[in-house]
Length: 473
Image (cartoon, rainbow, N blue to C red; front, top):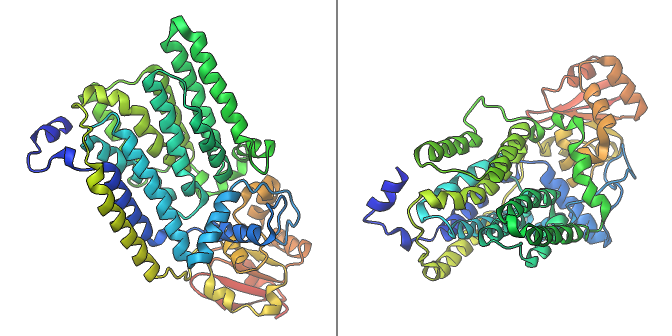
């Protein structure tokens, strides 16, 4: 039992540990030395996009990378994250990108540990921090959504702290929203979260509801204005709606529902929540219960939203949990931990840089296969595996398609889905329409068998990662 563990832990004084620093060091180490952090093809797209912006001193508003959709309008809504990733790559290669990602994770969990400490004892904070890490691991990649996590946490914590103190949020959060809107499209969640908490503030003060409405409503209007301060203005504000409105997003793994064919982090969150509800009598106010149910719906509908559950739910339930848990112990010895923790983190970063990250073949990066493509063929139109597209951009090859589903649009994604089905007529039509001269697919792609049987097409390279065909070879 949680209460017993606090009262009976004689050898270790919980007040002597610092969950924020423990979380920061642990998450930093985990991120720095987990190979899967760069196991996402979009990492290479973001690095290349950021490098393009640095080189051209501009933000692209149309596609500069693909051969199939050149000049198509493109909202580079993650432009600031991409520039940071490009700077990190220029400074330290892929190791630099991993260090940047690890720093964002460490800062996020340091902040979360500190904010949970306003209400909860150390052991409860550590438990919620572990659950938060578990919920983020399905999307534990070097991508802009990770770089935006410190702003997400700071914003959400700021809103709940304001509610705890019975006042509107501090306007010092407005720069956080502005930064968030330039890092990643998830900023729209921050604006939406303000709405139910505004309602909670109004209902909590019936006699002074107008004052609460003016304070919170004025803050929301100012926050929306701050979110417009991006290179894309209103288009950046509308982008999240346009993206989530695409039915074809279901073709992408992270936009698919959570499948409970194995242990999922979301299960652990639900189990812990039920434990506190039935054994501790923890109760959420109605508005917060509705927020929780909304978050669970989002996470079950789209796997990527487990990340929101991991970061938002601990802050949402922290104050209600504090009522049924032992009194908080605010005397964490942060000063004692600061110097040693910073030294440990510096050592971990130095070790990562001394052991450079090298990218090899993977389902996202056909490094060896692309090295076998002759230079004169590389410049010709290609039909490629979706997952390969972002790495091909990184390798200065114009792909047929890459990870930017929002830019390609629903009609193009449906056409691509038809091309890669075992339908020879559809495939032949696409090869003629786009003037395709070579193809590169994963070995399990149905199009490979069709290409093997087509006249004037031959397979000239194959390995465990990719199979390459060329016309008239």
